[in-house]
Length: 136
Image (cartoon, rainbow, N blue to C red; front, top):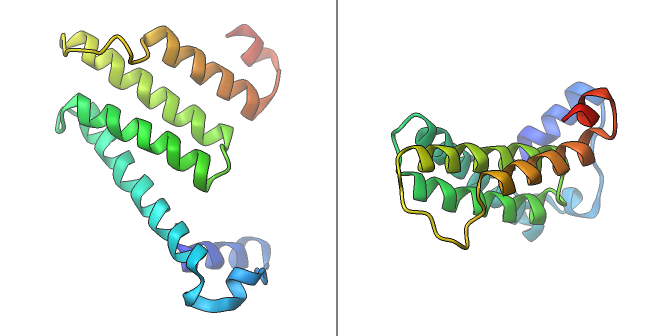
């Protein structure tokens, strides 16, 4: 969501209006425009991954998008484990599809087990230890 959408959601859901320094500066706050740009970039990369899953985009482009999404989550979302869990899972799916189509894969790229391990670690961070995460 861009700034205005985030503010509307905060107001509607929590009856909260943010009054941090950046929000009070108005649309000229550099951090706000950078944040909006990163969030829009994240959405574009997410669309590339979803298109690749449907066979509309090559899998190597999707894997590049996955890596960029990880960077954006780290930078913009402070490494949110819920988002990382989703992006790592995307990496797992794209890699599985690439292996199924015999697409070339660099030895430096994580394999299925690596993506699955990253996904499970993020899930544990996001949700904590409970019956389902311990079972996995």
